[in-house]
Length: 186
Image (cartoon, rainbow, N blue to C red; front, side, top):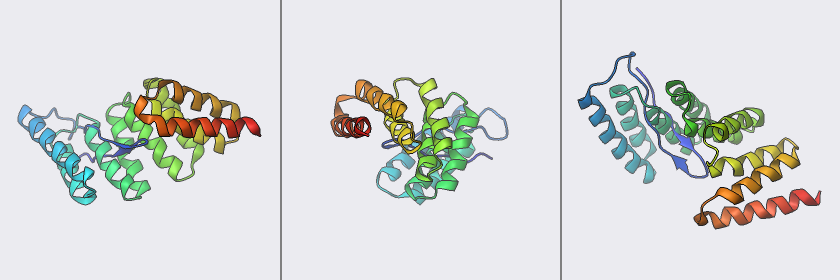
């Protein structure tokens, strides 16, 4: 029986589930799992974390072949500041799919919140490797590099974020510019 994970970036992200006992789910089970995941995502957006988590868990039990469902369980835990549980589910998501960038990103967010900067860095670098245009990861890399005292890499990460982030990230882009200016002062 597989569990779900939730991921967070600058904003929480939803993902797919893991396989149940190594068996391929039936089309009916996959369809039910998708419906439960959608219903769970709706509840998650309303802040109903426990109810959402229950649906993501059921979806994961029906279809354990996708990293999205454990990721979403992790996102619920992350939003409840239950970081150790979130990490369990984000880890499960990347176990199901080792190329699942959102899972690594959300692991990074969790580790960053725990001040485990080396682990956050490793997770964020894996995210950037898998998804080089995942803009949020570069903002968070800037934060982690700053914490680790690597100003040069922090500036490079913030500059990359500014370059690739979508227009609707005007606020975070301005924040990144201010962080660059501060890093270049000292």
